[in-house]
Each structure stands twice: as structure tokens, then as C-alpha cells.
Length: 45
Length: 280
Ligand code: SF4
Ligand code: SF4
Ligand code: SF4
Image (cartoon, rainbow over all chains, first blue to last red; front, side, top):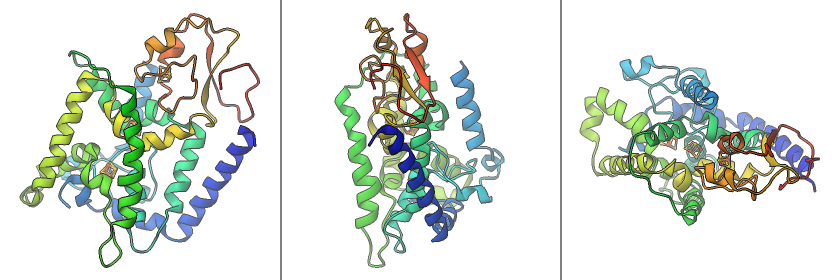
């Protein structure tokens, strides 16, 4: 497989995974974590 | 100079909610559903997007999911388009380290082997521990954020502790440990170029793997290259561009390119295979 094909496969995979992630509400889980103070990040949790 | 301007603009766009520092509150707009390309703590009061490493650990550590399609897809897209161009041009924490390195001081060269540590940190703290070290509800911790990340301490911890007395009261040994790590990282950043990027950062480790295939990449025309080694001398990341044009350590800063007397180093956006003779 040459690099051109690899790029196309990986880009397609990226788009498909991203959409699948949105469908199963992962983006919402990320949002829920990102809008509250993350105690682990700030060194307390 | 052009790169520095892009770095400032990117840092500002990523942290556009500057009011958050005054209010001591973190941003809650819809853009926080989306991961930014660089390492930028989502607990920073100014951040308007999600940190990709934090997001990845959040999903892996939750009891609901075992794998993150969303963040893996995002990282694949950033990686295939740009590789570590993200590090050289877009990441706010890379910029912070570069500014610290401008302070006058003795210098220390980081040994090359230390660059492998970041892959171990990626596997253990970002993937393995959040997935497998779980409580009886099946929930893990974002271990990289919790035990290591100095960006979280600097961008989230310090500003929030300043504005929240209750958080200050809750801060204990873990906070002190992370603060010491941050101080160590600041000292290292003053005496050596981007130590966190070279040794620790799991996000840089991921993007580096894409350097050989990313759509934006470097190439060296072997017919023009006179192998003078100027590019290797100019590179602060320890890369010899003329030997390894797509090293995972290359952050695409362009220093080697502007110093090449033979103008042998070029960049390309071509999606196809490279047609000129090159070291790829
Ligand atoms: S602590 Fe570090 S890795 Fe975690 S979300 Fe913040 S910046 Fe990202
Ligand atoms: S290695 Fe990490 S901290 Fe450094 S520039 Fe890249 S993403 Fe940012
Ligand atoms: S090889 Fe060139 S573009 Fe890559 S990090 Fe070194 S100087 Fe920058």
C-alpha cells in the first residue's frame, strides 16, 4: 500500500470514527467533563 | 517571526474566554464539545474547547465506553492533515515553553533517548491506567491529568485556586506534587528547548507518528542537498532533516528550511506520492 492510499484510508477512518463517536454521545460526555472544573487537572482530585 | 504570530493567534483563539480569569469561572459554550488540536487544559478559565488528551482519558475512564471513537477520529484527522505542525505552530503549551527558553540562562541538551519516555507515558498514563485501574463502578481516573500534566496545573490549577478559596482549602499533597512538577518543567524549559514536548507529551508522541504520512510534510531534494549538516545544527529538536525529513521529533518549525544554503528543504501539501527524489 502506498502513502496516498494510507492517507485516504486514515482520513476516511477519522471521519467515520468521529461521526460514530458523536452518534454514541461521546461528544456530550466530553462536553460534560469540559464545562466543569476538573479536579484531577487542577491537582486536587 | 511569522510562526510566532501564528502561535500567538492560535493561543488566543484557543483561550478566547479571557473574561473567565476575572470571573474565576470556566467557559460553558457549545464549542467545548470539540477538541482543540494542541494541549490546552479545558479547566483553564479562558479555554473555549476541549483538550484532546483530557477528552481521550475521560472517555476511556468512564464506565460507559471502552474506546473513544470521537477522540481517536479527531486525532486521526489532525494527524493526517498536519502531523506535528500542530506542535510547532498551534499548541499554546509549546509556545509557553519557547517563551521561557528565551530567558537568558546556561543551556542543557536533552539526551536523545529521553524522547522515548513520552511513548511510555502515553501507553501507561493516557491509555492503560484510565482503562484498567477502575473502581467498583467501573470508573477510572484521567491519570495523566491527575499525576503529571503541568499544563493543567498552570492553566487550570493556579488561576482557579487564586479565585476560589474553597479549592485552596482542598488542595493537598497531590497539588504540591503537581506544582513541583510544574516548577521543574519551567526550570527545564528555561535551560533547554521544549523539554515537555521532547520528553513527556503524549499528544506530541501521537502526532509524531503521523509525520511520515501527513498531507503537510517536509521533504529534502537529494539532488540539491549538499549534506553540509546546517539543518541539523539549526534544529533545536535534535533532528537531522537531511537524513530524516519526517522524524517524529520534527515540529515543522521551519528553522532548518530557512538556514539551508542549497534550498533543498521544501514543504508539500500533495496528497499523492512524492515525485521529486527525496529522503522520505
Ligand atoms: S490536565 Fe493536561 S491533559 Fe488533562 S485536560 Fe488539562 S491540559 Fe489536558
Ligand atoms: S508536544 Fe505536546 S505540549 Fe508540545 S507542542 Fe506538541 S502537543 Fe503541545
Ligand atoms: S527538522 Fe527543521 S522543521 Fe523540524 S523541528 Fe528541526 S528545525 Fe524545525
